[in-house]
Length: 248
Image 1: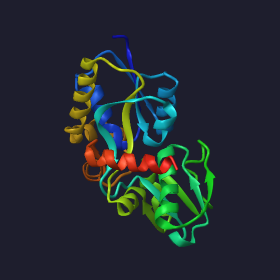
Image 2: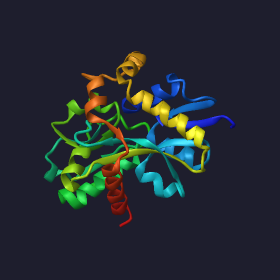
Image 3: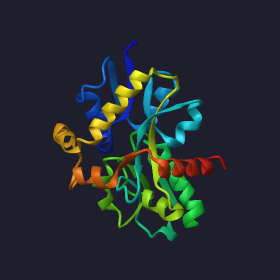
């Protein structure tokens, strides 16, 4: 098979995937590109890559996709890196600024605002260069590694995965591995083995990325306790429910 192009997210929570792809020895003849979630989806949609870790809110826009892995980026409790940060209590929020990096988190906070919290704020989109600039903002949806540092600037922190679970009783899935075309069975097997290797070697992964880790108190604990990687039956049900809200 020709060179396989893979787009993955360049956050701490995906480091086990990246480590497995690069270091397990299971994958051959591939190129790995590290992007923010929104770019992963764009690259797959334009056929710039063959496989991508896609934010689930972008699935319907891509068209026909094939789920190619039993792994995902999910949460069965507090996720810590997908947050609504606010300087006022939830019921007093009037404006929410939205992180450019992930549409899934943007759609999730809108579902929660309407159906769970019962608030109706004005939504303001942040541009690519504004995702880490929050001075003067009343409230902000922020995702990824930057949340470890900026959450201290807001007295009110609402974990979006935890809020979804409180609302639905189901886990939340943020991103899934998909392709637009059917890939050979041996390629999918190698891909799955590589991802699984990374998931079962999180400690080695942390050491491998030692110089690239965010300012996280305990990165290994975060990977083991806050991110749930198995794309199991309950997560698939949670995903179906979330997508049904997006269709409204």
